[in-house]
Length: 340
Image (tube, rainbow, N blue to C red):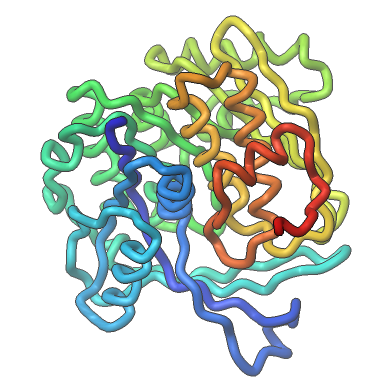
């Protein structure tokens, strides 16, 4: 199977221990993560050839991030070196009725200051089956948005299948542009879009909607509007999340191919260890499911939901699970028994 390439920013994550608040913390646990990197790790864990493209500073933190990429069996053959700093984010992990909080420190990072022409995209996409990007990257800066557009144009020209996760982050988008100014052109090259319908219409500059995902018969009409907006689109997926509390989540999913709606059974996840990166786990599972020729569309969305559920049990950004573990949960075994 040809490789999957993802493009985005890897960051240093500094999180409080034992659900402490920022004001209580005397130290932080340091790990690395970032939406598109998280997807690449999932795919590598599932045995696919995955490559992550990013830009890192030439300092100890940048070199450690590069080591992290390679440690996770993700290729780093086209990582650009430059810029002054690695992006950082701080995480206060919630519990019970108190939600988690994220504080970003990624202004003027190596990725935020990347320039068009930095990456040789034709070289990157040689022997590539899928290119994945998310709405986080164009939210970081105009430069990052320009390079992302550069990437999707080359990928499309070379016949690479393009997937995108809307990943709206209101705390980003601070450089004078709104999603509707940037995202429609980027999404016009996408073959698969993952996101809520209301977010999709908001980012597209269209009147927003408040869909009732319980009424499945009303959804195709709404999804079809996206197919009209984006002619290259082949599939749309939505992660269904019902937040009972920070410690108890219910996860489901929908996949629509323009003709038929496939819906995964909602699963309970409790207690939640770490929900950050769970959407990326869904995306990674979905890409794997769509590439797996033995899977039906129903099995692809079932796999994505199971992968997302399991991520909630893993500390850190990345989903450190195997195909066997995902398929076990996908088939209904949520016992959590010790494997001896």
